[in-house]
Image (tube, rainbow, N blue to C red; front, side):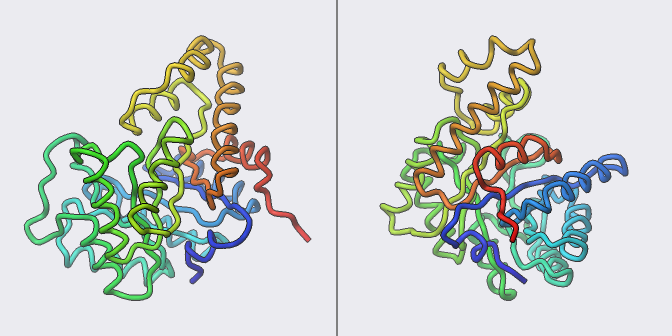
Length: 294
């Protein structure tokens, strides 16, 4: 099975895409239409998320198995430690391996229900993400990714402490990290610099949500954990009642962010798709990331 690390280690920049498991047959149709629309663009890899507390664990495994077996895409499954014993985690990792998925994004995960609530480990489970990395690595030849936080994890008291926790995940065997959402390229680049100063040279990939609607703008602000810069709000908020104008300006902002990241040598752009493909296809075409066919 092709590893994510090998796919993002070439000389040319790449992109990847993230989906979430469908809740019903209608959503499954939307998901698979988007997957098929993006497949010809040859993303470096594609991933499917894993619900809080394992709420859509079976959906994740089923969907990622179908990707592995029916498409040319390189699949990566998400895995969290929330509400799982070590035995259950071993079972899920075994399921991934059995269906041909050898790339795993290892996340501690948020408390179910309230992401800001108290995190209580399973009595027979794991407490930290680095322990999950170690577990995955102990069970076979997997390529393992972890999460990174440009503004620091909400539970970290400061950036220095947050960096130490991230470094520990790499010391445990992580191959790469995907950064949570951020507003400006410098926010991400400072994260990369902190890791480099700590002696980590593994790839760190930016998470990008195309700004196509006021909802995606607000979601980016919420998930980043940081207020949006004034210039961004001044540029987009006046267009909130004009769908076409907002989408055009939002994609301009997203493209400018991506262009700066690529100019700084970022190897891969990781796009959150909301199980839709159009905005991502438009951006990668605009950025020149469409593969050249012989």
